[in-house]
Image 1: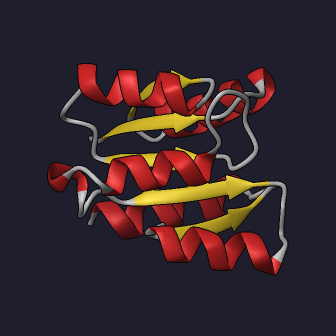
Image 2: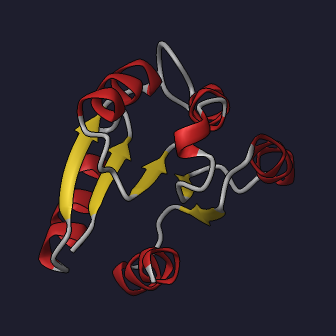
Image 3: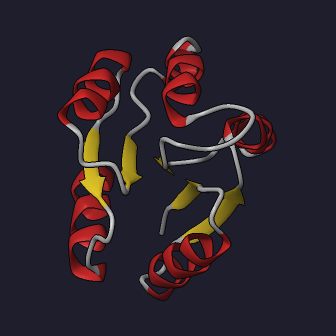
Length: 121
């Protein structure tokens, strides 16, 4: 199906997201921060969707989204923020930098898969 880049510094979240997405037929690439995510994106130009946390070391999700959106070939790439922060300020900032959708942890497997499917359709 699709190749999804999961960006999260929490190993448990990485495994859970990876398992859920893989179980639903997707190929999953993992990165622990924004710096690694940009490297993985450069190595795998066929990424169909990015799912990122906001709070991460080295480069946070907001900066990652800015840098992805700055590249013309990724202007339409769906980017979903999945974060424990449900703060309105985070949602507003994420929208301003070009996020496609915003989910709050813990998101159910069903909500996750339905959201991913909506943007891959």
